[in-house]
Image (tube, rainbow, N blue to C red):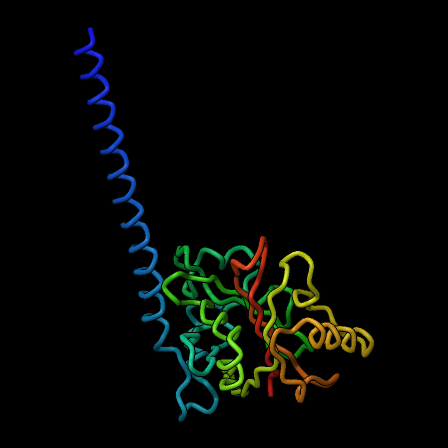
Length: 239
């Protein structure tokens, strides 16, 4: 009887080990597949990145022909942030689809569906995943380091017909469900002044020279592990 119980125990332990190995193998495959899909989408969309000689950014028109949700291209200097931008009918679809509308857990960098597609409003908001391999919006966290923030303040926003330089003004860590930085409806002078006051009071790092009522501001947001529902946020001025 004891020998039979030992045999059952041995087989149970072996089954447990095999299950663990299979799970680890699947997790490794799933992670590699996730990164491969993101890399593939990045490679496929690089052909649409505006070049220096493309003053009208005609390459974006080619991307729009493939997906009418395409609205621009974003580059942040000295980071891996160099992506085609899209805007969907909601803020859910592009969490799990690439800019060419193929399924991808890495998703896309996308504009809040409530914002003006031409980025002409006072406050535009872009979202992107925080990927453990450093892709998408992961590099936003670099601006949490004061030395990196002070040394890097430029980016570019390419839109159909024009390119705008970005001046990076602030870095914050905020609650995703309790922060004015996720409000695109900031219109009146009083609302704008209150928003700028919030940035001055809550920013971890700040360049105050570009914060004025006539600015057009761009918020970049991604997940953060600092606390529950935390978001790393970079604020730039569209020039």
